[in-house]
Image (tube, rainbow, N blue to C red):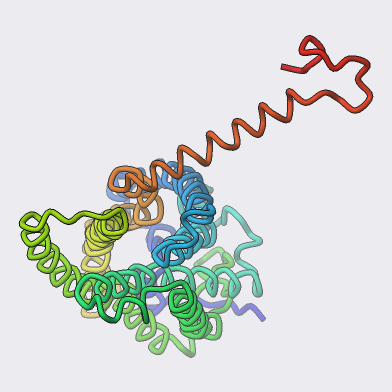
Length: 372
């Protein structure tokens, strides 16, 4: 059931969470178009490009990791799952955010009313939170797998295999769903503002609990993975430097070691990009939330514009985390590039062969009767 709810201090603070980023753009009449145009313009025009590039790149990456040669590798299980998680995050998070807040509408209106209805609201929040959490922790799980493979080679056969990889990914999916299932319970559609516009947001009776949940969630998808990835990558890089010196002395290089090294380089690149795209948004989000919580609502009018621009701008950078991986695979992975080339070459040959085959009822079978 929807309630009529006038926005108060607590609800105003909820603008910083993952589902209500720009609500103070709508409900704060004191913000001029110049004050809020910089970050919002970047969000409006760059987000569709991120979405289109991400959908295309992740789909191609998924097809490559599911090819006959690649799916035999344990690392491909993590990267295929990561591509799937990023696809879902693009659809249920990036696209929905852009529809709600990037498309200009009149005052007191919503772009897509069906998104602001009970049921749809909760489903979108559940999917959004699930796959954002899953995307972040798949990178961490892949980092752990590479750490064991590089730094503890004796345990490699027990951990770095297809069966273990599938189990870890399955466990990560279950944990993501369990954690995200709390958000729909804390949310509902409210009629807010002077025009009673429907808005998918937190329940008034759970305002403080929702804010605590969002803070914990942000820590779980940014700072905790950041800590795990940074520590493990430091140990991996240190081990690789030592091993590289040793291999130069004995001059032993195998195809298996090259493939492992490529996946390790891919992992390190993904990890650094994850940190680079996540950290600015997380810092600005916490700074915004803490600053707003210490202000009276009338004083917050003078603080919001700068924070709002930074918040929207850094969130757009954060979105890039879901579209960049295909380019990282292509740049750092020769094995990935080879499989990508074979994928399209094979399909092209199949397509040509299909069109060169004579039709069943064709009167002639000479080359001149083939469809070229």
